[in-house]
Structures are given as structure tokens and as C-alpha cells.
Length: 132
Image (cartoon, rainbow, N blue to C red):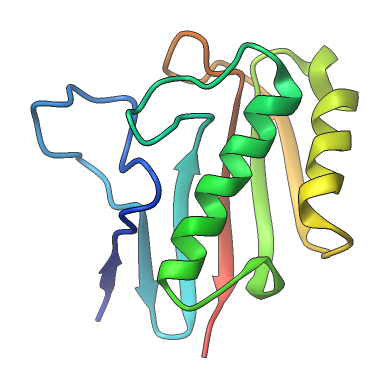
């Protein structure tokens, strides 16, 4: 069985036509695992918040935090994150903002360079969490 998780405090997706239902879930809980779809630096209106990688990283992580919270979890439950950076030269500033938001919480993480689907989105992060 899987349970679809949808938080009203994070955008469902910024990569589809807003007039159509999203083709993905924000998160799916299967047993005690929570799989959170990749989030980007979008506000509630599904607009990119900034061009600066630090601000984009903080917004992306806040979107993840909102979805986790809606499922009864937090970054303390996260075991793995995957990160896609449009420009790998942004890694030092990304990593600094990431560390600030995570505030010492440890996760495993993979960070790759790639091209997120939406123009202006310079970072996308997904995660897997263990929940009770």
C-alpha cells in the first residue's frame, strides 16, 4: 500500500501546466519509508524565488521541510538526499546554504550536475526518510 502525501505548504510541482493536475505526488509513504519528489526553489505561487543559489537552496529545503512535516517527519528522519545543480560551480555556495539549513543534521547525499526542467531553477533536491 502506498499513501500519497500532499502538503498545502509546498508547491506540488512547478514543471507542469498549472491548469492540469500534477503528474506526480509531492511524496509517497510506503510502509515506514517516505519518498519525497524533487523540489525546487519555488514559492507557493510556483515562481522561482531568486537567481542566487543560496536563496534557491534555502527555498528548496524549506519546501522539503514542509512536505516532511505534513507526513509527520523532519530532516532528522531523512536518510538520503539527491541534489541536481544546473551549474556545478555553484557547489560551494549551495553547500554553505545546505549546511545552514540542515543545522548539523546528517544525511547521505549525492550531488550531480544536470539541467533541471524549468528555466531559472538551478537546484533540485529529493529525499528518502524513515518514519514511524
